[in-house]
Amino acid sequence: MRPVRCAHDVTPPAAAAGRHHCDSRRALPDACPECGSGDLRALGSGTERTEETLQGLFPETTVHRIDRDSTRKKESFEQVLKEIQRGEPCLLVGTQMLAKGHHLPHVTLVVVVNADGGLYAADFRALEHSAQLLEQVAGRAGRAAHPGRVLVQTLHPDDPHLGQLAEHGYGALARNLLEERRIAKLPPFCFMALLRVESPQEQEALALAQQAAQALRQWLKDAQLPVRCMGPVPAPMERRQNRYHIHVMITADKRSHRHAAANWLVQWLEANREARKVRWSIDIDPQTLA
Image (cartoon, rainbow, N blue to C red; front, top):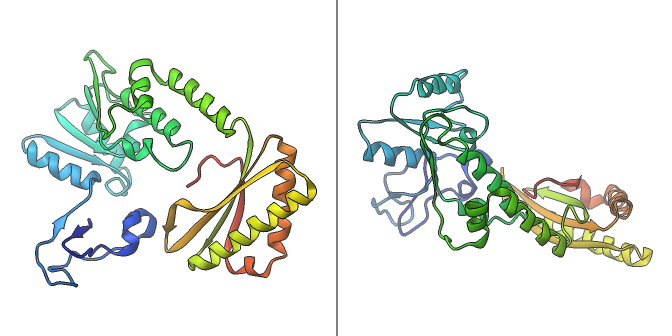
């Protein structure tokens, strides 16, 4: 099911985050439930819409879609790969599953649709991870005797990071990102812990995170411990599976200082009655802020 819109948004609120996160589904209505208009237009740029568009543009060519939904059946992914490896002309549409570890010797053109989604995400590691994925995707093209070509769709073609990746490769970009991390005092130039709080009630999650951050800052001040406490802030995907997610970030120049702050925070949360009403966890050296 894909989202549709008219003058009124008829998409289920939770569906904005994607069906795979909220599992919210609704049959396509005949008319807008607010205004009664039958002018409903499908929106979105996921794999299903891309598959439909390509099939319409190239009706004589087989289009294979490879994503979590299309490969749900046992051995379905392997069957599609066997068809692809026969070398018959076809178009492949897929998610990151296509980029990782599959030998597709007949692929000569790779197109990355909407690369900006990963290049400009809230997670400070997003650009690093997206660049790695682009390198993997580029490696799918021209693996055999035929030359390969890679096209990247972006609304920011003049972005210096993207230009550096295209012209000088991942190594040059990684060195530049490493220097940015050093200046910003982000990993690997600091030690991080992340308090994750989640609850079906936004105010409950936010209130506990605020109390925890305030109490921790006061303790750090009294203990004269050089640890930075930032937040609370909503997670990059604030709501998923009908639960709100709030973060408090802890960073320190020494691992022992980070551990001391995290240990104190655990004890404070375990003794706090309000903390029993929500889910919370402390992630040491988090690899993602999602």
